[in-house]
Image (tube, rainbow, N blue to C red):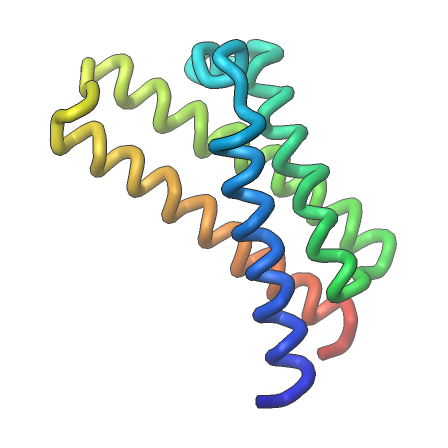
Length: 130
């Protein structure tokens, strides 16, 4: 395995760790109860924690300043809207635990976040010339 592949995989691993901490350890009721209200500070705080936490990957692959800022801003926007869409969908359709539709929506939300981490790793690799 090349050094470049190792660095990209390490960056993805750090983003996975960050996701667990930000989504399941640090998320407060103020955040998760308000993510479905567009523009509510609870959703902004949650997305901000994710965006800043994504900078952990910069410890493995250092981006250019422009790429680093773009990653943080795009992660904030993407995370906020992915969560908002999941919350709005489950609330409007009244899907709740343990309904299958609730879990499908939850899984789609988590998969969308994972896609953003692959994209972040790709931008990091590109920015560093890997």
